[in-house]
Length: 337
Image 1 (tube, one colour):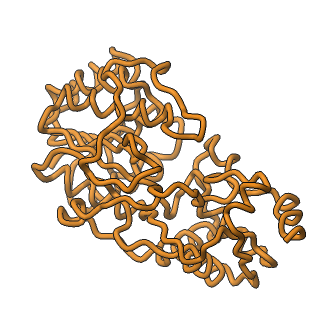
Image 2: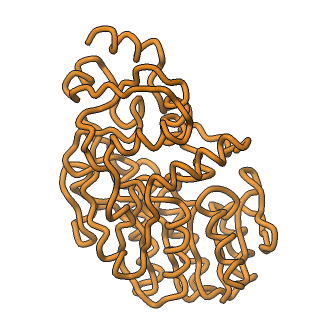
């Protein structure tokens, strides 16, 4: 089996490259060489996927049984279309890492794999789409939906779309889980979004990588929601963070209405918290039937803390600075209760 990983040097792309090598596959990676480090054993090719000449040069290194695209999250659909078109003659199938944000109903409604998608042309530029007044839909969602259409136009039934919600695990670069781990370690009274029994569905990066590789080797097509089928309660999640870090903290569960009144930003200041009804109501049963297996989220928390405490270093990313409430703001809210 020969695969091409677009990206392949950090977080999900790195786990995909590692996992493919462990299966005895031949792995080519394509990136600019600016983030992360090439996995030992791959054939690294340097280039910019937004440049036609680089894509044509890359295609000459094929053929591959599959392309797994982990690096299109910041690209407009027209650039995804250019890459998929250039590589169509060099690859049998395309596994595209997308997002649940492509759905019209996210995050307001429970979703399945057949829920309607946002409309975006496959050749749209970066100006297409908008973000709603309440934060949904998002311009990002429109762009990613257009990216899916672009791949579908080039690869047809040989295209597969994996739609995770939140991906956590060792090597995380956004900082959601890492912020909660550091907050748990600091201890004291911890501002927490009620109810403690709210279930959340983040998925481990290693499980996403394994599922992507399985699909690259298969013959399926279409979209799969890649979210944890069992999830964990927010209370269980914070308990796991406290246990792993040895923090002597005590969550203070605060009504979401109070948090909103106090100006706490959902999704970022308290990572993983959002009040919309559908944000953690994503049906992944089709992916499970196709082989998605998810480890307990408490195991993800444990392994991420061991990586982080053992001098783990994520790649630099601007989204890191968005996450976590300032200690002064948290203390002020807790004092007002």
